[in-house]
Length: 200
Image (cartoon, rainbow, N blue to C red; front, side, top):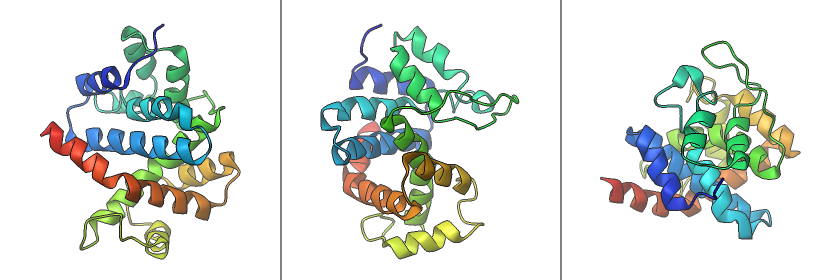
């Protein structure tokens, strides 16, 4: 198994994902994962953390009912290593997918726990940003995010239970996870936007 490069990973993502929303989510999670790698002392592995983030939902657009079940086959076909496959699948840990299977690959490395915790949260933060006049995370305050987080009807598809389980697996208070992920998204927003502009 070879180590996949970032360019190869992005090409692989786009082979199976055409919806700009899914591409943007993948780029967001990639950028957030790289930010976390640097913050948590894994700076030399930031590219690797990013690649896992980029590929984490590779099977979702084509197989939403078999999310995390189809990914290994797609990734193996492209020669992606088992370590990346384990990390990708582990972000579905304990979550039952459409066909009734529950993902039993647990997040082990800190990177996998960060992916599990931050994935859903990036969706909620982005939804909150789109409600703002600026349509940006850069001027969003933590208290505003917390208010949206507590509102059950807001971004109802973003599971609070998964986010809280993620914080628990990391041994963090929920506030720490919210604060850091919001900061990561604000810091990476311009980079993600320019990537998306380049795709148009």
